[in-house]
Length: 202
Image (cartoon, rainbow, N blue to C red; front, side, top):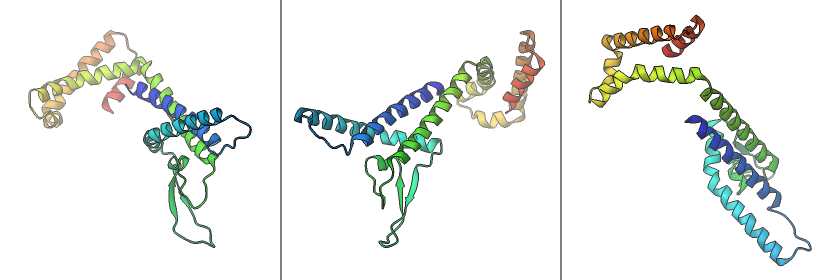
């Protein structure tokens, strides 16, 4: 279901953010007075974090594109130096910043936070949808309306042409009338019936 996909994406991007924050905060850390063992353990931890970020980059970039996040920016050369304008992806710049000047870490974290917010919003939307009984009723009705045409497809017929034909429209009309009678019998109000009809038609 879409809810579980949205929930998994939200969990991933938050974990990804934690790794990025740790990596950016510590990639240029200077050591003073620490033991060799501590430095080696820290370096191993930072390298493992970098590997997780590299592996998660494709998914993070996909989510940013999905929600229309401003992840691709232009890097302009200094006037005195000259050179071409470079397109730099915010997510790619986490590990390899190839722009003319270094992209601020906060800019990277801001885009990540925006992506997290979009993922959480979708998760909330999908959750409210699955606890809405009208969502399930609408899904059941659509399944019932689609069943005759699915049977035709299974039997090897081209249901699409039949579905668009007069006979197909008559079959669907009869189904809708039958469903509406059942809903009236179950006690649905006029406003509820109108909402259901609107969703069926749309």
